[in-house]
Structure formats: structure tokens, C-alpha cells
Image (cartoon, rainbow, N blue to C red; front, side, top):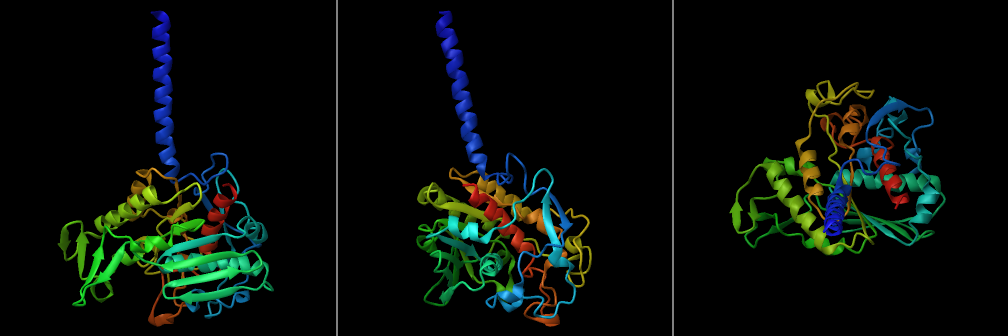
Amino acid sequence: MSCLLSFLVVFSLLVLVSMLSHVHGKLINDVNQLGNNGCDLFEGSWVYDDSYPLYDSSVCPFIEKQFDCLKNGRPDKDYLKYRWQPIECNLPRFNAIEFQQKFKGKQMMFVGDSISLNQWQSLTCMLYAAEPQAKYVSKRIGGTSIFTFPKYNTSYVLFRNAFLVDITTENNGTRVLNLDSLSSAAQWKDMDVLIFDSWHWWLHTGRKQPWDFVQDGNSTYKDGNRLTLYEKALNTWAKWVDSEVDTTKTKVFFQGVSPDHDNPASSGSKTCEGVTQPLKSTEEVHQEELVLEKVLRGMNKSVNLLNITKLSQYRADGHPSVYGHGGHRDLDCTHWCLAGVVDTWNLFLNNALLGL
């Protein structure tokens, strides 16, 4: 009897450990999983480093005008000199040759809005600047841009889809946001690495709002709470990843919400205009980031969060401001200068991929 009791106790403990391991497995989607030896890479501070920036943006002729702040006349340069320093470890410096060799013969796709464009251009310039004599091929087909390095047979793709879910146009011209439909996903699943991004376009209203009605299951309505719509769209995306993506072959990342600095609460000044140093502190809570984390934690498949929200919140100095594509007529406190803050996001990506 005692032997049976002992067996049951041991069996119960094994079941409990198994359950906890499964829960922990889901928490690979947690915010702090890209560290080395348990280090949280996303907790730290910006330190001045004379060895920065990681590249000279003038070497990359393909950088979009809206991100090329120095070429657009930005006079201050301190914003280029800040390196992210985690509290308990170091973030490895980028080695473009090592990255290309590890990624040889593979394809990486960024899926999202113009913030994805920002990160995609940062990565392609980080790679090209290391071998500026290397041949590259850049082409655009519809909403898809493909940047290829023939030497390594590597492709870095940008797929423009600001909402991830579909927006369709009816015969009468009515535009419908379909929260349950993800028809573009067929073009994503065969990639070796996927990096998703979505949020900024969910805020657009009035003439900038790209839909007239929302289709949500069997319900159709004019509009809704944007956080709620965002969460429903993310859940549709999450179900697709869980059911359709083999994450042992395709590594999936979600870019955290990129903060803008359009108001006094977020930038410590009227806007980002004239800010030349990182902020000393920031207390703004991004509800959209909490929604994203909630969805990721509920998934069964492994998805890594590039948790760039808080650390980027300090960098009101990193935006194009009046040195973007529109100058004083179109102040840009949303996107990021290149070189700059977004390069650090790609250091996190690099660290994660080299560790896989």
C-alpha cells in the first residue's frame, strides 16, 4: 500500500511539473525571452558611445528620404551616438558577415506598416554598409519589396500590410475591415523568419481611416474601440500562426509597439521637435503593448516579442522631426532616423537569431 502511495505521489509530482513546463513553454512568448543566460536585454539605459553609429547612412543609396535625417539637413549628431546597455549583460555588437553566413540561402520577411519599412531599411543598410562593394538587387512588386544579396543568396522582404487582417472593397466601393480574414498569409508562411508589426494605422480616423465598415464574424458595424479591434485582429493572426506555421522551421517575431512622441506626455516637450538628447524618464503606459503581450501569452506556438516599446520611449531625439520628408510642413515624431534607434531593434533580432 505504501509503495502504491509513493508511486501516486511521484506520479502526481511529475504531472504537476509537466503542467508547469507547458505553461512555461507558452511563456516563451513573454517579454523577456531574448536575453543571454536569463538576462533581460530590454531593461537597461542608453549610454553615449563614440564608436556609434553602427554605419554611415550615406553609404546606403536606397534609404528612404523620410528616414535620411542627416541628408535632409539635421545639424545635431548626438542622437547617433547612443548605445543600449542592458543592466545585467551586454548586447552583442552586430557582425554583418556572420549574420549573412548564418542566414545563407534563406528568406526573412517584415510584415507591417511604415515602421516595418523603417526596421527593414535599417537591417539592409547594416548589412550593406559592411560590404559596400557587394552586389545587391532591390525590386518592388506591388506592396512587396525584395532586397537580395546574391553573394549569400539571402533575401530580405518587406510586405506592406498595416493591419495584418484584410481590407476588401465591395462592388459599390465600400471598404470593409475583415477582422476574421487573413488572405495575405499565404505569402508569409514559407519564409525562414517572419517579423510582424501593427498598430499605428489603427489610430487613423476621418479621411485617413481606410475602412467604411467592420466585418466581425456575422456582425457588421461602422466602427469600434480601436484597442478592441486591434486585439481581435491580433487573435486572428495568432490563430493562423498556431494552426499554420511550423515554428521549428519558421522563426516568428512580433515587433513591440513603436512609441511616437507627438504630445507633451510622451516627449517632455510640445513635440519631438528640437529634442536632441534621450529623455531622463518616461512613465507613459502603452495599452496597445499590453494587448499585444496578452495575445502572445495566449498562443501555443513560440513567438518572440521584440520588446522595444519602453526603451524606445526614451528616444524622443531619434525621430526625423522636421528633417523627414515633409520638413516643417509635416513634423514626423513617429518614424526614426537612420542610422539610429531602429538599429538597436535589429541588434535584438540578431541576438535572437544567432542563438537559435
